[in-house]
Image (tube, rainbow, N blue to C red; front, side, top):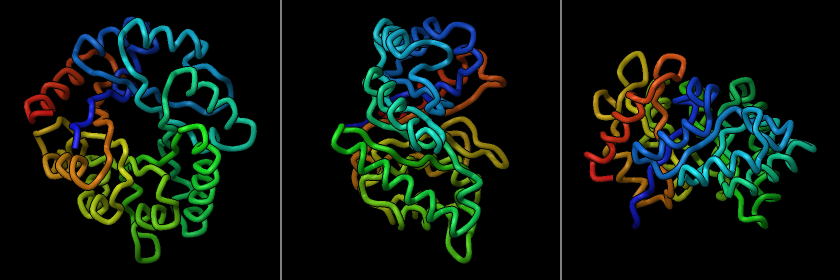
Length: 255
């Protein structure tokens, strides 16, 4: 299987993005990243960080980057917001519309069922367009909800086309078993987040307790993973040293 490309979750450099998005994207590309994943989209307009969809696409193209995903709110998949979410991502050339987190819904069996229904409904509408939706892991997604991790409950109720964006460091930080989850839901991790876990915090790849090497091996053997998305954050998302180090760590692992 082809080794996935390396992208950056732009929340890692959110402070830089807010200062100068175009320059930030160019620096990300200069480090070596092939793609970048915007954050915080709510579906309220076909724009991001105050820039039109066309302007953002131009910045990606000028930097030579692919839009490898977008972190969105659950609301971005609902009602009229979905049309705007589709419009923005089609212009950006992105096919992965990933719900970043939904802590309120994942706290209960009923909430998880509601979230699963939203994801399944959106996935059915997106499929004819060649687009996917999915859900990204946070520590709270590993919490036991009536005897089963919230993550497992969610993905047992979602259809196979709903992407499981496992975040190996985040899930471990919640005392979850990211390897077990990857083996349980084979074929669903089309895009993943890569970070380590240095108790009690997530941290630099290769410096902590996360089974990063085994995680990446599963991505390349039992999942059709297209993107390794780095999410490592400097304070306030300022500076590029942290994301440079993360990129170098993955390359040192042969990725």
